[in-house]
Image 1 (cartoon, rainbow, N blue to C red):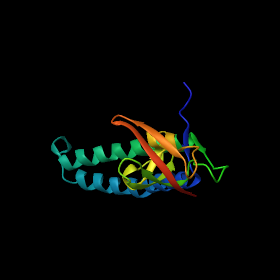
Image 2: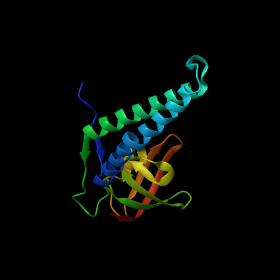
Image 3: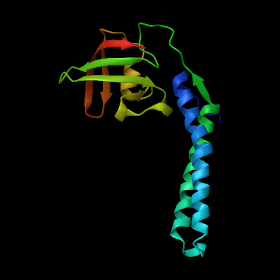
Image 4: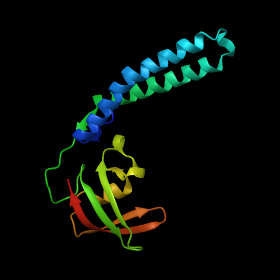
Amino acid sequence: MAPKVFKMTAAGRAELEAELEHLKSVGREDIAEKLKVARSYGDLSENSEYDEAKSEQAKIEARIAELEYQLDNAEIVESLDDDSISMGAKVTVVRKNDKAKLTYEIVGYSQSDPANGKISDESPVGRALIGAKAGDTVVVEAPIGNIEFVIKKVTR
């Protein structure tokens, strides 16, 4: 089976690389210290601090493996057309039904953070916006029905 390709911007790749480096250095050092302290409490079979530290260690190692996989299979996407929306673009839209003004940054799946306005190019809104230009109206198929957005501004 071919590995999944993770599309991302150059800035997104740099963010993931920084997170990976932080986890490999600071994260691992912190966990090693917690394990050392927990071991000093004695009997490991009934030591909740040790169990918690081991669980945290497993989470950190899993995240490191995930980041390494994503970075090994990353494809940097750069915009070729300044007019149309592509990955890395910041887009201001107005939702037609309630006139709500929203701003999104189109990023790769691994960088998405909807709470902070970073939406994946694979999300329903991201897919609808890709390729559109300022002034266009796009329709997003959502579980609650179709939602129309008017694109007001596209910046890089």
